[in-house]
Amino acid sequence: GENVEQHPSTLSVQEGDSAVIKCTYSDSASNYFPWYKQELGKRPQLIIDIRSNVGEKKDQRIAVTLNKTAKHFSLHITETQPEDSAVYFCAGSTGGYQKVTFGTGTKLQVIP
Amino acid sequence: GAGVSQSPSNKVTEKGKDVELRCDPISGHTALYWYRQSLGQGLEFLIYFQGNSAPDKSGLPSDRFSAERTGGSVSTLTIQRTQQEDSAVYLCASTLGLAGGETQYFGPGTRLLVL
Image (cartoon, rainbow over all chains, first blue to last red; front, side, top):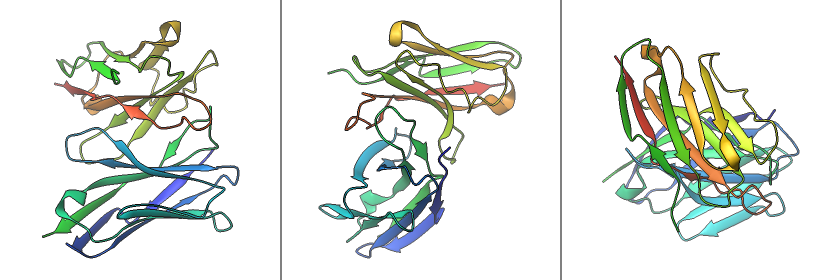
């Protein structure tokens, strides 16, 4: 089955700096890669996702890049703000009816 | 529309007792997941239901854990003879289960404390 590894486990950045979280996956058939944000005490929520037919996707201050050859994908947050502090989970799936496999999470702390 | 709901929101039980946790997915969602999240930890996959297919139980940690999904909708996670290490937040999520509809919508979770 799919295995998703995520790094780093914790990340501290100064407000205004960029943050990058990286994930690798094992199943070359995976074609759907979502990212979830979980604020303290709350449920995870989707913030952005990417499919294997594109290499990059942006939504305001967040972007995700995908390298299918290397089987890794990354989340980029620019101009970080204190409200970006949360745990971020990457995931992979072959899409549709197939199970989504989550990474182990990255705790991001944005220091004001 | 209504999101994923879970009940109870909190459950305190004594070691050795059985507990049942309930998940009501979004109407029309064919896929349902259960996860366990210990304090400060990641999402530990437990079980996955997709339509009428046999569930993927590969994440259940022991035979004390079981789950069922009746009528393709409501799901119940049962933990028998609870142990203190079962204390965690149990999260349920549902998805449309179709290509383009893989977004997982999580419930608020059930916080289980085993004394």
